[in-house]
Amino acid sequence: MGGPAAPDSSWKGSLHVSYNIGPGFAGNSSTRKVRMHVHTDNKITRIYNVIGVLRGAVEPDRYIILGGHRDAWVFGGIDPTTGAAVLQEVVRSFGKMKMEGWRPKRTIIFASWDAEEFGLLGSTEWAEENARVLQERAVAYINSDSSIEGNYTLRVDCTPLLYKLVYNVTKEILSPDEGYENKSLYETWKCSHSDVVFSICRINKLGSGSDFEAYFQRLGIASGRVRYTKNRVTDKFSNYPVYHTVYETFELVEKFYDPTFKKQLTIAQLRGKLVYELADSQVIPFDCRDYGEALKEYSNRIYKLAKKHEEQLKLYKVSFDPLFSAVVNFSKAADEFHRRLEQVDKKDPLTVRIMNDQLMFIERAFIDPLGLPGRKFYRHVIFAPSSHNKYAAESFPGIYDALFDIESKADQREAWEEVKRQISIAAFTVQAAAGTLKEVA
Image 1 (cartoon, one colour):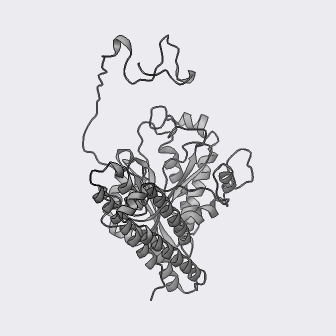
Image 2: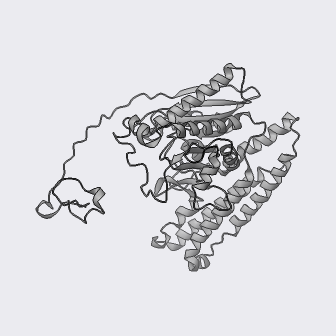
Image 3: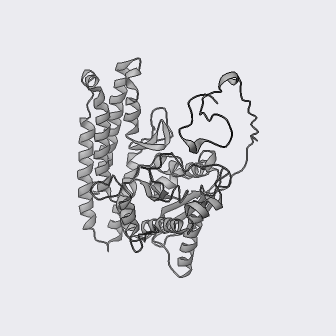
């Protein structure tokens, strides 16, 4: 190999050769080429989703979905088996409760998706096939992909509507970590963060890369995912090193990642408890005030990005004031809605149902049926996978994409007109979402 030498001895084997990292070959071999023979069997094949339903006793037309895939690249010791095992354990637990006479207030749908590794096919096809019903009836989607991608701390990605529920539930579950016996999962999660602000653990935005995509980014169903992860300060690699390889086996999990299986048990408890609370609480446990705070943060962040082009903002008369105004209005509407919610007569089922419907449809209010420019599948105005890293998430993606590399655009006036158009779409959407929180006439 040509190029620079390997960074350190951990990259070097036992052969008496120079361990370089490329690109290309060195010396007399510089003109050589590698020929690859790829044997791929291209064919149309049938895939199978397995769906189980636990019918709700009070609101059977309101759905909580727990879904995860079971197909793997090779052996799938971590991805997806640690998630599929959790899904099955949660199903077993709810089944046992049902046998003892319990039934949730809302319907729970358990889904084992096929063909996730081929582009989220199973979950996406089911979402599209049932889109009309899901848009009218789905309350939340909890993802059950890999339970562990490391063994350092908890990682949560979810809609701001679920922040409060996640914090509350993690305070009720015991930590599986050594040295933290009798401590809550929340406490160890909090201790692992060096960037904790105001004593609250960080929750990430939802991007893509797993089966929640169609439900959250396309249909606007409140979604979340939880799993154990690595130490992001010391472990600089993007994913666990044997991800999607032949070395991802049961032995890997048993010997290195979760020898006691306590972390997977904890994730099963957390996912199961989230589903339980969403399905059985009289009032859906969403807090729209957290969405208001998140929108403030995201709007300030995208404005800060735009301010790098201050001269162009003035030249082309680009203003973020409509967006800031809409965010303020949403926060006020969220505060007022929460005040009414705390005073609601819980003995009046119709009033509770009305307010629950308002909570359920908040996420839907951020959906633009026209989709994002150049990415029509993604319709969420506040969140979308990054255009440059599908696993990561971007807030106000329409504005962000319009601003990205804008200085290299040939027609600067047209480019900045697109920024103004995306600000207008975002402001309209946030203002419209605020309107859904007003008291029903």
